[in-house]
Amino acid sequence: MNEKNKKKIEAIAEALSIASNLLNYPEREHLSDYYTFVSIVAEEINNDLQDSKSLSLSDLEAEYIRLFVTDIGGVKAPPYASFYLENRLMGRSSEDFLSFVNECGYGMDENIIKGPPDHVSLEIGFLSRLLEENHVECACIMIKKHLLWFDEFRERVKENTNLDFYRELVELISALIKYTKEAVC
Image 1 (spheres, rainbow, N blue to C red):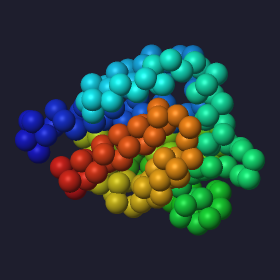
Image 2 (cartoon, helix red, strand yellow):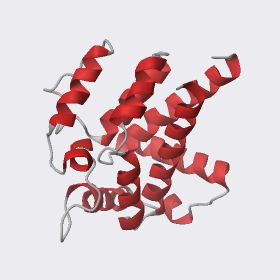
Image 3 (cartoon, helix red, strand yellow):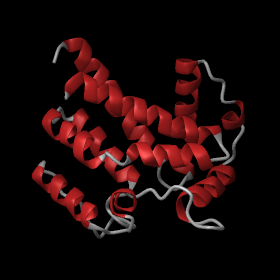
């Protein structure tokens, strides 16, 4: 990988790390990541995201719950790989992801995880770490095998969110994954 691509991949790793935090339940300590994301998207795609600039933490919390936790008629965009790959939670894909993390030389403390291990924020965060630490082979496997479901998740978010913020977040993540796949896989 040439130096120019290496710098781009480092920037992608950082962006994916921020995105991973933003796919968790919104918390006050992540507000700086939220505003960083809004300004990056506004600058990069010439979108001012007016509604996103004025959102409060409670707006983000309410939309997070509505999209990813519960809503009338069911969860709009379940954030778990096993839902999309097996139509259930805590399926084989959850176990496969944990095994893959171990195969790449990392461990995941299941006692710290507050739900199924195949949550989108954990998978995007792990991809970020792999890229950051230049584990390209594992990053490519992550993209080709463990993030196959992300496009369906992205579509559900786009169709069901009331906030440009989540729509732009999943679009940006999708573009970063696609770029990484083309650049290093």
